[in-house]
Structures are given as structure tokens and as C-alpha cells.
Amino acid sequence: MAPTTLTADQVHARLHELTVVDVRTPGEYASGHLPGAHNIPLDHLDAALSALKAAAERGDLLVVCASGARSGTACERLAGQGINAATLTGGTTAWTEHGHDTHRAVGTRTAWAMERQVRLAAGSLVLTGLLVGRRWSAARWLSAGVAGGLAFSALTDTCGMAAVLARLPHNQPRAADLDATLAAVAG
Image (cartoon, rainbow, N blue to C red; front, side):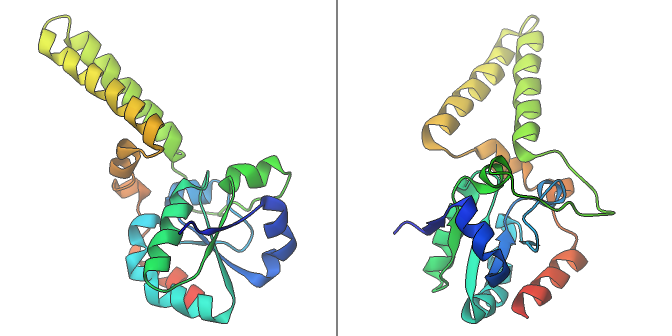
């Protein structure tokens, strides 16, 4: 079953009554998020189940990401645990396109957005495959593999490279930050 979706304008009108959870990486969250949003990266969703269940029992839970893909995945995982949540259609991208304000984390590290990290990694791997392939022809398979992965990513609306990059240390929340967020969400 597809998760309930809300438009940016619907969320804006109800923001004060929603518990908003942003499932992007800490760097993406720090670069701009919905006012009052709590950052629980998708990779840490299982650790947050009890806090999210408590939040959903108090009121409506909204899960957001950059485009709506990760938040849709999060909503499906939460539904499997008996937790009802909605997702923001088009994610924070649609939110800002509709002229709604975002908040930026003050005094925190800011990593590049995941899409930018993927572009850098994919471009670097393709370039490496082509350059090394001038001396060792088998290295061209690296470029072909990345190209195939990008095509597969576009066709399935998933991104294996983003999933790998999200696990890097600079894309992970600090334990103390995640614990504080879970306590705030649980209320």
C-alpha cells in the first residue's frame, strides 16, 4: 500500500500540528530542512521505531527527504511496524519551490547533498576507468559498470551508490545527536 502523501501547501498549513522527521543524511539536513523537523537518517530508522511510534500516537507523523523517494521507503517500513506516517510529495525540493522557508542547522557540519556526492563519485570513477584504461584496457569496465549502474538507477528510481555513500562517516549522525533527537521525538 502506498503511503499517504501531502503537498507542500498542505504541510505548510498543518506544520504546527505535525511531527516532522527528515530521513536525509545529517549533512543534507543541515543544509536546509522544514522548520521543526527532526533528523533521523533512513539507515537509523529501526533504532527510532519506539520514538516514532510514540510520536505517531500523539498526532500525525510526516516523513520527508529531498524528493520523496527515501521518505516513501521510510513510510512503507514504518507501516510494516504498525506506524502510520505520511510523506511530503516532492520532498524538500517541492517545499522550497513553493516558496516555503527552510531552517539551517547552526554550528553543525555541512556535507554535500547526496545527489552531489553521487555525481562526484560517479564522475570520478568513470574518469578513473577511462584514464587507467589507456594503459590497462580492463579498467574501462569500471566506467561501463558505473554507466550501467546509473542507467539502472534511473530506471528503478533507486541509487545503490547513494546507499553506499550514506554509510560513510561524514554522512552519519553523531550518537549523542541521534539520542537527543530520539528523546525529542518520543516526547
